[in-house]
Image 1: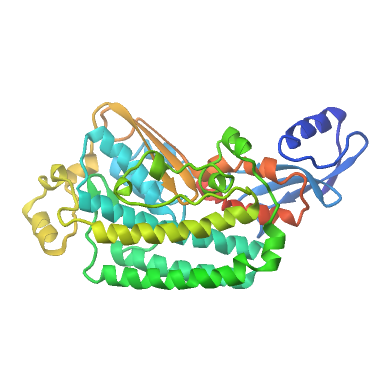
Image 2: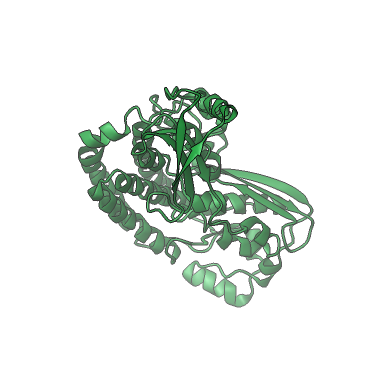
Length: 415
């Protein structure tokens, strides 16, 4: 820690920035601000550093310092075959991997003109909602531990395990599934999967009622989150905020509704919205989204059609052994041509609604086996700006409460 004497010009700049959202009550000249560096090794900072200038214990200015887990995924992808980028794009988001692979693969499919069979689209939708529930429980668990609510942390990490087990049963892998491939999915659902999935969903429904008692109606939780870190809808739009953080400020926007992909346009569901825009509303919206995800999964299971799980444009390249494996076990062994996939020249954009918000994928193809350019924008990257504008004016103790309510995940922003 060090004491910084702030110039008049700097104070005016700080004032201009902080008064956009909240009047901190901190006045101008002659004041001395203390600079705090929280992280990047602090347990409350995640894989990032938070620079906070405080007057007493009131935060006057806050700057998120990101980039500590930058992995150059986009640049790495430009030196790899298209198919080998799938495991890269699903890593930054931890549990929320499937929406990311869907977005990337959708862009590749647009380049190649691939049509995805209806059954594969439904399987993708089911897995995307399973991972959304797991991701929300992860975020709720982190918010809980930031508040000192150890039970909430343990409950959330226990409940997300149910969804991880179901995803493992469907995909054969844990956390990073690489289940979505150009033209379809890697394998069909096991015979007993629908029963196990329904059992898991019923368990989560029961738990949501208990969550309401121990967390949402907990007076300590309410005191720590209500009227804290209020994000006004007009500010959310200006800053490009996305996902549950946007919807908790009263803005009814969700890519699944605005620009449906996979099977979402064939399913009836609601987009939970809250008007308050505070930290409590952001947590509440995530619980409500879990309820909607359960409804989406049930409808998808009911409507899922029989048929192929891989595009005929891919399956016609199967050799006899691949055909035998596919017909006997409903598993896709990719033909060698997929390793040197060469989409025609052009570019494609795809966007999806991931657990933390909208993710956008842009691929430029020059006709070679590698993407000429690949860029993807993650929801956490778009939401990180909120640290700068929501925290000033609050006490130091409110930093973890606001941080946890944003469900910000540093690796997802850094990529």
